[in-house]
Amino acid sequence: MQLAMIGLGRMGGNMVKRLVQGGHEAIVYDSRADAVKAHSAKGVHAAKDLADVARLLTPPRVVWVMVPAGAPVESTIEQLVPHLTRGDIVIDGGNSNFHDSLRRAAALKVQGIEFVDVGTSGGVWGLTLGYCLMIGASPAAFQHCEPIFRTLAPPEGFARVGPPGAGHYVKMVHNGIEYGMLQAYAEGYDILHASKDFKLQLGEIAKLWNHGSVVRSWLNELAERAFARDDQLAAIRGYVEDSGEGRWTVAEAIRLDVPAPVITLSLLARLRSRQEESFGAKVIAALRNEFGGHAVRTK
Image (cartoon, rainbow, N blue to C red; front, side, top):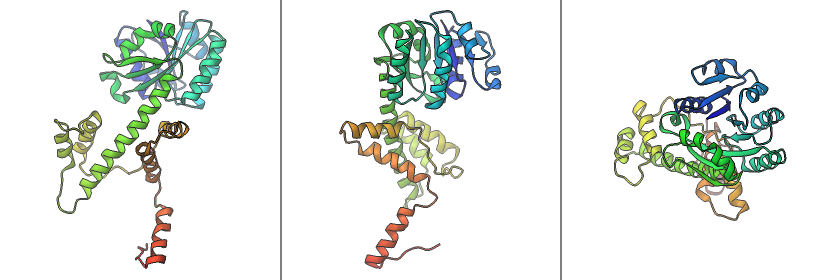
């Protein structure tokens, strides 16, 4: 079927390739002309601007927005909607806050435009392995877009999880869980790396764990790949960003009175990773020295 993809970054660009390989016709647009040019191929048509996106699509239009959450999504939808008509469908496949998705769905519904939020997981591997799609949509919009979802996802890898807003809600919690899993692996490998009794090869251990152990997973397979390149990860700085979903998951857990200590502490560990030196740790060292005469290390 025909659809437009707005945003041709690491995710959007690969999704276009997978869709075209699956026989779909793609209209593409990105604010970067070089990104659009890189996707000129059979089955791909470049749009000059958002108005051209709508012009090139046959109603009912399906427009997939794959730009960073927040202001970029907001401005893209605001500029796109005047060129759409009743019955058209706007899909947000980024990591938007589900509160924003609920608001956008309600605003578009007034104009007769369907809003679909798709929590998309798979990263740069999605092109070859497929994307797990957590979809919030009306039954009618989901049914109309199902051929797109079937092409993008592996078998059993997509589902309508509820009405608009539900897709990004489920993806938010998915990413919160990811925070906790990543932190557990990080701490385990940190202990192995710090061992005073054994000089352990982390890549060999990761490979071992991926064969039959209860901690085997795709994430640990990626750890095996990373250690194969550099067993000590010497070239990587221990600075960990977050894109918001962990914070939102923790906030939702607090709102619902659901204890989520693992996810919460994994988020706080990311914040700690960004400090060159922790002032809080300095305070603890100073206080230990004051009340117990414990030695402090100086620069």
